[in-house]
Structure formats: C-alpha cells, structure tokens
Amino acid sequence: MRIKQGSKYKEITEALGKTGGFCPCVAPYAWKDENGKDVDAWKCMCKEFIEEVEVGECRCGRFEKEREYE
Image 1 (cartoon, rainbow, N blue to C red):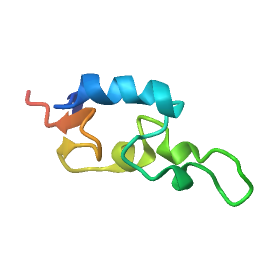
Image 2 (cartoon, rainbow, N blue to C red; image 1 turned 135 degrees about the vertical axis):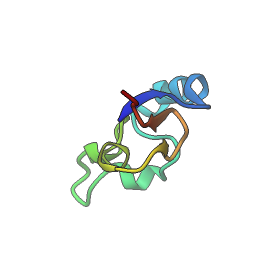
Image 3 (tube, rainbow, N blue to C red; image 1 turned 90 degrees about the horizontal axis):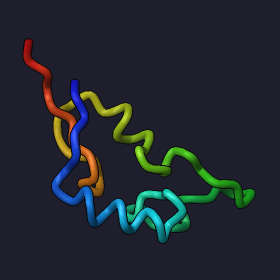
C-alpha cells in the first residue's frame, strides 16, 4: 500500500499545530491516559490509520491509503 495526502491534508496539518500533533478529529480527553500522560496512539499519523489494512482515508482525511499496482 501507498500513503498519499488526503482530501483535507492542508486543513488538518494546520490544526495539528494547535493540538500538539494530536488528531483534531478525536476528542481531547482521549489524548491523555488516566495518569495524564500523552497517548501516542492519537498522535498523527495515528495508530488506527497505521494498522488499517483497507484502502481509504484516515479518520480526519489528512492521509489516504491506496493500492500500489505493479
């Protein structure tokens, strides 16, 4: 699979500056664990997207996975 810019790349990249790199499409309370430590799973490029095996955009639309053809 290949990763490319998604439909909202510019918009979400700008928002990441305000969120400290956390996905702006995930509620801020999810960015910290019960001890107040950052949950890196929601830092862009998030764990959810990295582990996704299907083609398509990430939750917020910053990145998109597509099939590579030989």
